[in-house]
Length: 489
Image 1: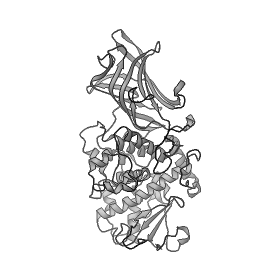
Image 2: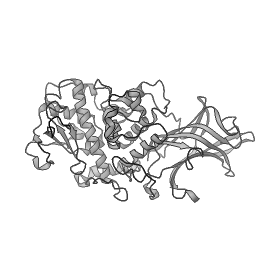
Image 3: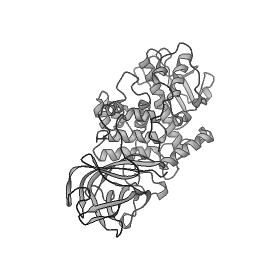
């Protein structure tokens, strides 16, 4: 997992967005592989009706260089070529596309439309700092699509192949393929980044903490306020179309945040307006998605921290730490461990993640060694395969292909037959406490570690006096929160 410290940004975004009198140094070092196609490279692009490949204007190169300087390595390495095309609408008064990548071929190539009033027109791109930022955001949005397809090129082909054509790994050099393979391994994404993003979002929808994707009706939310869009789980109205646009909008606006003079970085603005670290139901989806983008390498730490503002899961160290009424109550921090395997008995068809630690429990009978265990169902969904990713059923897959737990998990026999938080006597294995109702939020997860929080709503306390004085299946008397962290290093 990325370490929890602030990273120095590569360069001030406000310096980048100031148009330069002379041409900027081109290209920046970590993107020096990016090649801008010229009018003589027509054989490298897909032909679009009425589109004309152009040589880049110095003003366009200046803005493009600025965009590349802002991008983390994974996004930067995913883009190998950029083409400036003048592509008018196909019909008079019709829709015009300002930037795009192709889903089925040349996925390493970003197209920027220079027609008329569009953001990458040579005259428009430098009209103002805000306009320049919007032009850069559109490029980073498309670079994110390229990065997703780079990861898709390295995921296992079957049975997780997307219904769209899988990207050709040969588009990227061996060292970039290895970079993508490392990202997939670090995040356990053999089933695909789009599938996992879709699963995360749908889990929040099912918990009443996000809204379903709108597909072609996304524009119905255009003009919606920041609180509504962030509470729906999106950065912007366009992010509400489908999973792949959600990923690209979340990434690009977090990187270019607060630089356009508009409110399109809605989720960042909402979270930065919070007064403390507590993560409420309206913020949980966007907080989790931004953490996922950080562990993917789509965001640098500075982007992540700047967007989530004061929000954080405060786990004092490895293990589980309970807080009752806001006060620290008890810690289980000995021998923390985690794993993924199949369930037992009738639960054998499910893939189960568990996070466990040891400590000391106290009841009316005295103190004794105890083990706390969080058990979560991480079986992926069958139909979260496309960019739209409609949900149907769970998919039977090998244990080694299961992803990490991420996002929201309703806990307890009142909510889910699998997801549980339990404490048992370590000497005899007898159950002491079972959460009857609660919510677990996994905010960060990778091979570097897992960080999460649990809101306990009802407990079945077999002995009394463990988390509160409640005995039996009762609501907890005071707000009870448990944070946890597992760092394998």
